[in-house]
Length: 418
Image 1 (cartoon, one colour):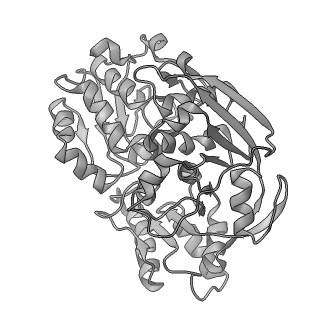
Image 2 (cartoon, rainbow, N blue to C red; image 1 turned 45 degrees about the horizontal axis):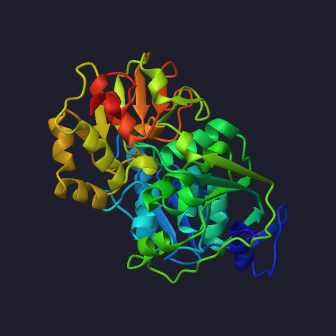
């Protein structure tokens, strides 16, 4: 079996499962945010559930429109707070304690290797970086799972992606996943497990692994996953709130397809509007002027991402006709950025340094685009109207390219400014 099949088998009480099979599995953690939880709460009450299956396994995180941007957002967030109080949930994260959900939960040790996690958010696939099976589901599935502790699945086929060769300077996990999506397309792994491996992955830091698994959904994947190793152990040891188990894929496991990539040929990559698969090397896009730069999100809002952007922009200024918004993904990352002087570097460069929020990524707040404006962002989606006006444009990149573009006022490479 593959690692994905083994985790699903273990959580459904089966010796063996195979692709295409239907099963009910016990979940280790359920999460929802201020957009998706209110629907789940309404449905939970509609089915007459008396209580949640486990108060320590349901996480509510207001991060999309929080800090609350308007009355409607405030009322959505209040639903989470009231429900959490009513059912005495352990994992409610109020503003000031919250962060972007998919950065916060691994950081807090609430997702561990071997887990089966569902979330009412498509980027729940992030936690595969820890060797967990995690996937986004609908709010009604969350309502049902909150009551029963179970969810149904069709066992996905797996595609193995093998990465080898040394990474070029300023190339990171973001470039690997953008390159991959550019190769297979936004439906290239539809309802499949995307298993990332190879010598490049085994030396990739956890931050890069989280970024890659985060964007599995952008290729249509059911989940992204990386077999845990020493880097995983180092990350979870000391922070894991529960016991964990390392699963691996058998050598004779069946894969629908195997893809290989020579990473020495991958350059800093940008996804152009209006699909993550519309990729080009950053160096080929120097004619694209930029109105807004965003560094942050569940894809690239970790401390490593902020350090990378700060390294590029230190001692420089954001271009006069461009604005830059930097959003650390959690309070802990925010504090670390202050301690390391990164916050000062950004503010001195004329960038905004924000409280943790999903904010502009989904066109929520803290950086909405006007008609005709163009942004380059370290976020995960660039669909029509994703960050604001339907006639605006979003380009996706790694933090180094985003920071260089902020200095240049157009899409550019780090080498142009360092």
